[in-house]
Length: 362
Image 1 (cartoon, helix red, strand yellow):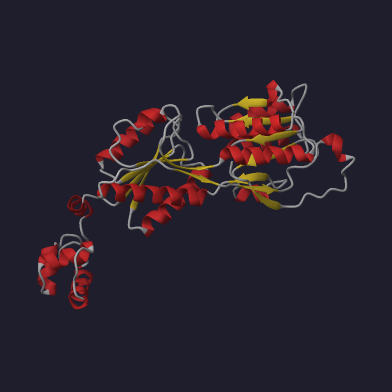
Image 2 (cartoon, helix red, strand yellow):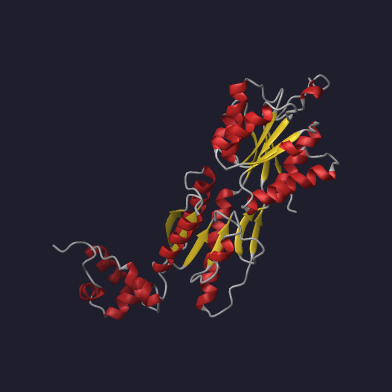
């Protein structure tokens, strides 16, 4: 007996007693075929285990029904959740996903993009590792390109991002309302638009409250646990330590918590901690972590929607416009944040309750 997928449309047509063009119309959902003939073709397809060759079908239709995706770091929970949203929306629309990991390396990112172009994917979703280098990615692009999370500097593109400025502004204002004046911010590399927007949101909130930012309290590192830990130790052991630390990405937040435990500094009694990104571990950490929750699933879904719209526009000969989808975040307040030490005596009766505040769009 022949192996599955060795049958052709001609074989299906012979078994169903119809023409090859009728089988093609049913398989590709093109043209009008009567319900009776459609049922006969589908029964024949099922009986033979026929599966159309995706590559050949793509050549006929001018599409492969594949969307490529290049991410900075597929081990980061943020991108895992974005990827889930991408896959759900793609499958719903009859598309498959090819996922590549750049591991934060611009050269590897470009290599993956070239490979996806060779595979003739219908569109590419990209979370670039560098906002400045990302401008070069657009040169010679052969498929609709949608940026996620991080975007090129000073360029009009299709993109889906969290309103990072508004999220950081709201979080900083919350810490100020608790009474904190010595607030430290730790951020990843300054080549990401996400980091830059979050730092600017912090600056704006501090300036609006007429609170100076101490030079030692604005730190840049690498977006990993080790960097957060090293910066945390340095801040907490300095001559003028902060009363609150705002970590601008999830892995550096873990490093801060590790430094606090090692130094046996109570949180939030002595130092409050607020993080960016809210995952399952945040609610069960000790203490439960106050954090900004990004709409990760929606980022993925909306990116696919933009890509599909660009594909359709290209097929119709229309110009693919540039559009940025700006999504709201939520500030989830838990027990890792409280008033600064000096205010504890005055507010010892205060109980920090878990609540969610939606950050406004800027």
